[in-house]
Image 1 (cartoon, rainbow, N blue to C red):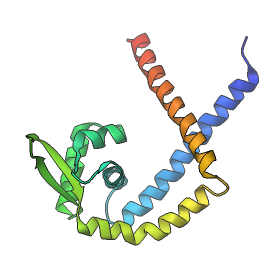
Image 2: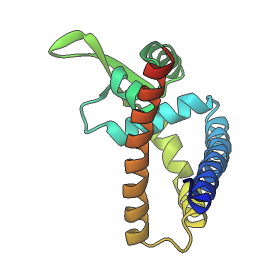
Image 3: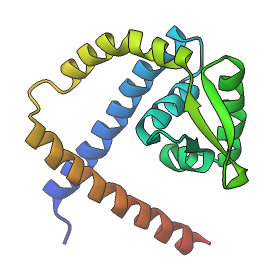
Length: 159
């Protein structure tokens, strides 16, 4: 027997996620335009900031973070390098891997946006405590893991 309230809650959740994705996409597009780059390139810069522990980030790690093909990352990061936003260098122990890090130009440009970003984050996460955000992130991580499993199961089922 189907639970109508649960079905409705799931549907509402899915549409809320879609709405959030659309709004964040619009925000990312504005940030990207301010740097004269594309939204995917902006996200790559943000992924590098998140992933870089000081030694640079491999393209495959960026691709995994953004759920895109590694060839797309290679193409876009070459463009970012040409525009002076990225440094690309071979990994010391294996030259087949390229490590990427932000340039001073990129860091300066992103730093100039940081106050505006903080203001937007304050608006987006208004009335959300650290505890509430931690609980939400935990729940979302569980849903993301389950969604990956569901996608794999569906792919197996239809093939």
